[in-house]
Length: 382
Image (cartoon, rainbow, N blue to C red; front, side, top):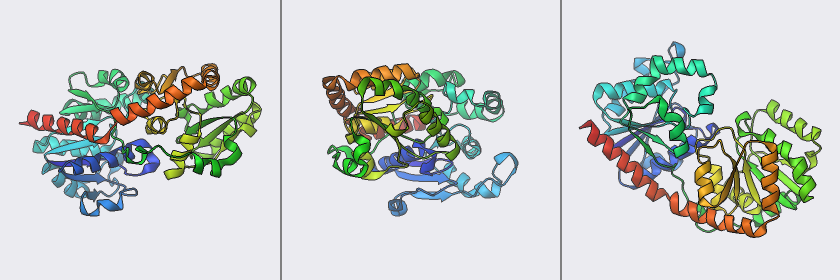
């Protein structure tokens, strides 16, 4: 099959979706298909793609309201029109809407991955504008898709009301698990972070943003310190400086500043080692469509505590590798304390979580399910 992916920006600063698209493109290529990508930002296109995955860069929007001119999209329209199936990532992007229109004109079937953009929390952000946008531009885009992929049953439950007639499928994000087949060592992180990992060590590793719920974790720290004595929280990630300063001030006001360590972005082998060196990973988000870091933590053998508002929270709880908790400081504190005092339970969660990820998120198996979605879209178009 000739499969074309459309992602507005292939830039890892945008969080998990770009990474998921990279892994998916490579997996579909490895199954013998002709894969292309259309994007406006090629910042994180892997250099290894040069001979195997074609990338078409579209210039930024050059018309009012973020639209693209016909001349700007000529090459992209030609590519989607000659594809067997087109895979759009995201809901709100003008690039997607205009190229989906081209697909409809040429009879090319297309599928969509929502990337959490129709979750309840996401729709509450600028709700009236998004509803108007759907009515004016987005509804046909949703309704005429051959299939809409959700990455968790939690996402499907929240989102399906916006496209009640469209075929849906739940397929998790594809992860490249090759770096995790051999469990990473904690030695590199212990050498790098030293006393920041003393006592019970908690880890938050993600983009620092209001939706991540860090306030609740910081508010939980006084009770955790009182109950456990020595406990350190490492916050790994970047965000808006003003927001980070606000969080640091909160930590000062609660008297826990010296137990919270802001280490900035951590990646590569050091990130995997940091997961392994931590006792618990905590992500109290208001919304996560998938949360790659949750499953990275689990496959590294570190149990996770996740807000019940995260789409994959049920899957994580059922796996045995994590716990689903309300998004409030008292619930976080209670669960951290309980698990910290129960070494045997943590050890069991560590083993179950790693085994579950290796079994259920294997890239080859997920790629087969995506391939089947494409084949059904082609059959539907015929």
